[in-house]
Amino acid sequence: MDNEMTPDAARAALLSATNTSRRLRSRARWASTKLAVFGVGIGLVTATIGLVESKLVGAAVLAGWLMLVGGMTVWERSRLVHLAGTRARITPYWIGSFAFYGVALAVGTDEKSGDLTYWLPASVVVALPMLIGALRERRA
Image (tube, rainbow, N blue to C red; front, side, top):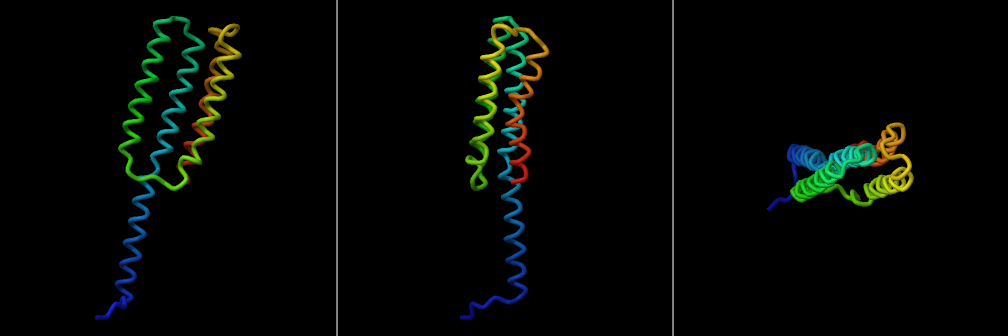
């Protein structure tokens, strides 16, 4: 029994491995989509909380956020391929966005309620870490 591989078989095996690797890496890039969706979501939540004083709208925003979190969690669970180190790479972006969110709320909730010049830039600053993370994760 001869176990030696011919040059043609070796080329075919390498091509197959390359194609499989490329396909798996493209399927594993879901974390960038998740960061982008949550980045836009938390930016919109920040702007809405600061600019709209209606309790009903606040409850609707909270319900929308919870539905987004639930939907994205279900979607994430259906992703079968994960790049190595994804969690370690994306955690700082989550921490950054939620830290900025806490600061934006602490500084602006009482004295700047409804102030467009505060809440729009604050919502961009809150969303920025996750959006930067989405771009960087796309290239990982």
